[in-house]
Amino acid sequence: MEKKRGNVLGYVWAVAAGSNASIAAVIAKATSSSQVDRRFQLLGYAGVVLLNMTMWSCYVNSLKALTSLQATVVNFATNFLVSGLTGLFLFKESLNFQWFVGAFLIVLGTLVLSKSSTTPEHASQAASSKME
Image (cartoon, rainbow, N blue to C red; front, top):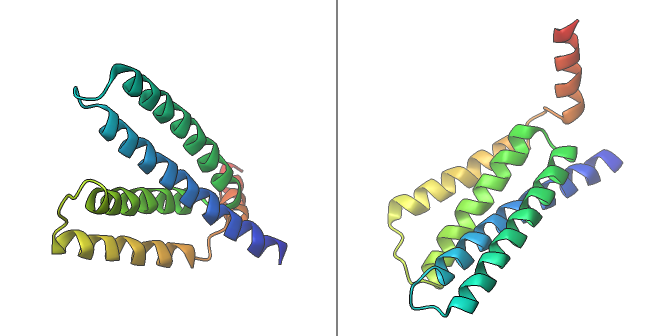
């Protein structure tokens, strides 16, 4: 049961990492315009740095519970989806049908990877046996 809880927590950390990275990109886009007040730009850049630091912390925590492949794919998928949907709703950017098909395939691939039987213990045991 503890292992299952650790896995779920790993996915939470990976989603948090992807979300922080995406929000950092949104702030960078919103504050990079020459029409934005200089003080607001500096505050935005500070926010980008803070969110990226938080993203790395979340990502490292996700690596403690998941394989590097699982953590990276979930992080990437979350970043992709949050960035795209934020662009759609906040910046009124258009997303074509291909984007939604790609997003569906990324989510599907993430689900397949999350159900894989590879765990961090198995990966480290396999690496140890190769070293011997």
